[in-house]
Length: 368
Image 1 (cartoon, rainbow, N blue to C red):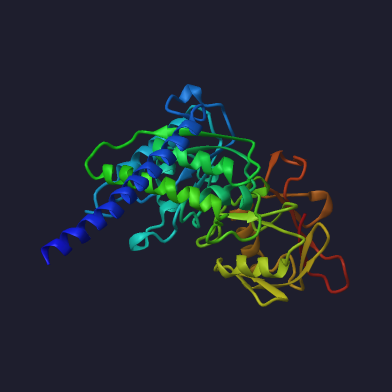
Image 2 (image 1 turned 45 degrees about the horizontal axis):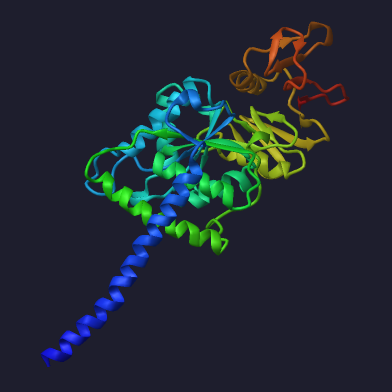
């Protein structure tokens, strides 16, 4: 029996040892290919980075998964993003990560909150909550958001792999650089560094099998989006636009469903209600008539009615102090971007509240 056992062990060793050597060799070869390729595209000195409009900040959680301690990978990535912005190397950030990570943590939102706290304007930050893997983040940046030149922000090991992915997935990128955040040196961090060897082998398999993101969706070019500055609670951060008009401070798409967009705005504003035909502002009910480049709201309520004062107050809260045109009688105007009274910038939002000149009278509200 002992002789048979020894023979079995010897056979197993002859199988396991070569297999082990092959696995180690594969990891080392994949690691060297990625590291060598990233040379000249991955930088630790900020002066080596060429200014680019977009920075792709790769997501992680603010606390570690083991022990719930401060995640230094998170902190150092925020440090690096702040450095790039304040050095004017990037103008805007796309933060890509898991919006429902372990424990329900929204990685992109946590990173955005940290950057805003450090002085980066909220309207310069866009979130992608479907960046479940590095591959997903890179592909979605190029294919979904149509960003072809960007600076990747993460630790060096992560940046090297992301740069390789960006240039080997057929994404038609123009220029991809990476800025290295400081790499943590505590004991737990070395678990992440060890896993990276396996991640690089997996990356080559993903490239070979043409792996696609878990979710991609329709193309939404970020350079054609407009951040909603006057945000209402629970309103989306961005609205995809082709032609910009404004309806209560929110952009509208005239080639989309205006009715659905108005309903969405009304659903998040206590002053508004909308049933698909009639919009109610306070106590005044308006018929809605979208034109090719304007939206007309019409009501039989007279301009001097008490409830109309509530409408004026509401619009003033959105567009600022109005002014009246004495030559035209009742005609109150607002503009979202005027240098001075009666001087309007091209394509600025212009809102009129004026009398209806008809037998029965009434009031019309026009968004140009």
